[in-house]
Image (cartoon, rainbow, N blue to C red; front, side, top):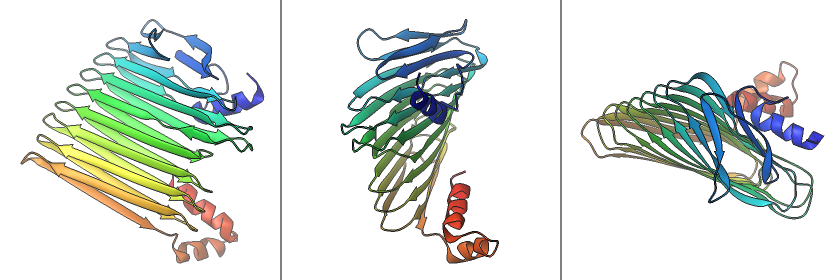
Length: 305
């Protein structure tokens, strides 16, 4: 890999070298490296672009890295990755996509990830998006995540998009069985004329299932953001949706949370707050010797932690 591709890999997967455990690295539309373990297999799909990641039951303390990097201007792709997580497993999955576009053509990656999480399995899933390059070509990503969690299963999902993506539409859908749980944390920052739309739809079909969807976002300059969250309580369950956003300059933010109780014992809460950085926060930090810009950066970094 060249230095640009190494930087992309570091940004989206925190990789400075080849990871231990199972991994599949995709670069400019082709495989750039793969490793499997005794408990985790990775198989190339035959009918479309993408892979199947098969994790055996009772797999513990193992990880899978499946980053995608694009440094070729004009490359557009749709990739389908399916995860089959065996019951009683406990694993970490690190995905993410980085696009460097120094040309005039649009570069685009649509990643469709489907999770089949077995009974009592536990998954931490981290997905980061990053863009760079001084060309006029756009950097576009449209991630889609589909989740099915069996009885007692758990998914912790962390999505991060902080820099460089001109347009993104994220769609996440989840279906929960008895005692299943999902926790989603989103962190996103847009600037310039960027656009970001995120949509979460969770069906809590199982008894004692639960969902917690939390979004933290910052919109600068002339960028636009839309946050949509729908939690459906179809059984005795608990659900919470929260969106906190900082708006700056001429940005526009829409937050549209929705909760729907279809069962007497569905306990659901939604919260949404959008506002500018408080003046007293800036003044306090500036009295400590920071410039106004440095103070803003400190506040934003703390908010997005």
